Image (cartoon, rainbow, N blue to C red; front, side):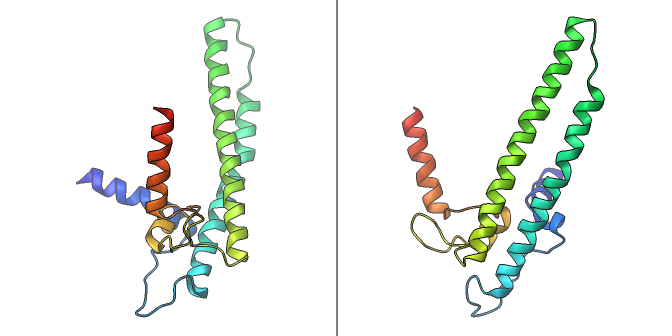
Amino acid sequence: MQKEKNKKQSSLSILFMAGVKPYENTKNERYMNTKQINHFKKILVAWANQLKNGIPQNKLYIQEKATNFPDPIDRAVQEEEFSFELRHRDRERKLIDKIEKTLKKVEENDFGYCDSCGVEIGIRRLEARPTADLCIDCKTLAEIREKQMLG
């Protein structure tokens, strides 16, 4: 039971961070109307801001922790920690770029539709992964192709 609760909470963490609730469709509502666009724009902006605000903290962490240990094992552990922090920072930077690309799609009224086949991606999928640019069918096919190519 606790595992299900944690899974549900983690899938809603982006929404929680943005201070929004899951979107509730109304009957006969047009897909990607102004209300939906504003919902996702708020999520994307909050997510980008959270990531951007964390970057200076990572930098300070590395600067404050930098010590010249005489023991080679202690130095190796510290270098591994710094390497992990830098990889994490690089992933966050790439995610910020993807969020900004998605925000540009929002501004160009091209958000919410599959880049491959043009169908609606879907509100729930976009809430789980706001930067999704493929519908679930095209994403599944892409993953199968990738698996076949890599063996």
